[in-house]
Length: 397
Image 1 (cartoon, rainbow, N blue to C red):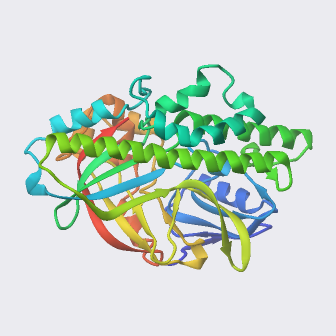
Image 2 (cartoon, helix red, strand yellow):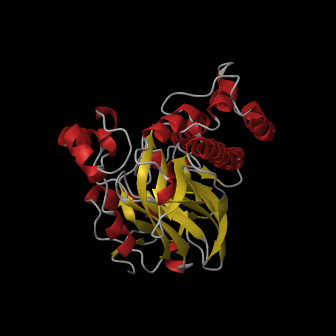
Image 3 (cartoon, helix red, strand yellow):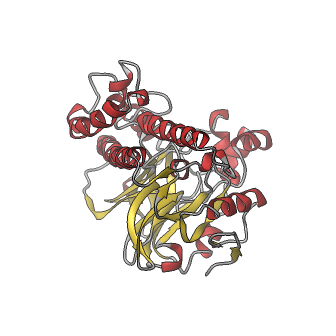
C-alpha cells in the first residue's frame, strides 16, 4: 500500500505508510522534517511510533549535518536469521531443555561473559578501532574496567525487546533468529554524542524545536568522530549477533538431531547510518527502526512474542529511501502494558510458545505491539514476503 498520510513542514514533507499513528509521533515527525539539512522528505514506516528525539520507524536523509539522537543509543541494533535443515518433526515435544541450554550459552539481561568465556579473538578485530575513538573521546568509557567490558558483552543479548527465537516457516523448516545491538558500549557512544550535540547547540544559542534534535555539522571534528564511532558500533553489533548465533546453533546441536545451515542467512541493522544515493544526491540516511529494502535485498521483520515474523525481499521503492518497517512497533509504553495486562494475559497470548511467562516480561506482551499483519499489509509496495515464520521458542532478556 502506498503513502497514506502526507504532513507539511516549512522544509520538506513527511510521507507516512500508515494511518495508525498517534498525534505525538506525527508532531515529532514534523519537527524532524523541519530541520534545514533534511533532504527531500522524511519517510515514516507502518510501525512508526513515538521515540526519543526522532520517531521510531523513521527514515531521515540529510546533507551537511547529522542528528545523533536520530540513530539513538542502541546503535546497530538489528536482526539475524539462519535457516537449518531441521524440520518440525525433529523438535522434541517440549522445548524447555533447549531454552535452558540457549539461556546458559548466551548471557541475557544485565549478564555478560566472564573473562574465561569472552570471545577475545573476535574482539581483537575491533580493538584498534575502538581505541582510536576512545583516545579522542575518553569520556565515552572513563573508568578503567569499562574500557574492556565491551569484550565481555560481545555475544550477549541484553534486555528490553531483544530476543532469541527458534521458528518454523511455512514448510515446517526450523530457523534460528535473534535481535540485538551494540550493547553497553554502543549506548555510551550514542549517549556521549547526543550530549555533545546538545552542548554545541547551547553554545551556539540555537533554538531547537526539541533538544534531542541537536546536530553535528559536516566539516567539524565531532561530525567526523561521530560517524567513525557509529560505524564502529555498527560493526560491533553485527559481530555481537554472529557470536550469539554461533552459540545458539551449538546449543541446538547439543539438543537436536544433526543438521546443517543453508544459504538462507540474513543480517540487517535497523538503527544505523549509511551513505547512500537517493534522488540524484549523495546523502546520509539514518534509519531508526527501519531496515534497508533495496531491490532484491533480503530483510527480517519480526512480530512480537507469539506473533508471526517475516523474511522479506525489498522492492527498492525510491519514495521510502529503499526502506521498510523493522517490526510490529509498539502500540503502548512499557509502563502502560504493565498496568493493563497480567501474567494470565501473557500466558494466553503466548500459548504454544516456550518462553518466559513471568511478570518481568509483561511489557513485551503481544498486545503492547501493533498487529504485524496490518504492518505488512501497509507496506506491500515496499517488500515481498519470502517466508512466514512462527515462533515455537523465545528467549527474552
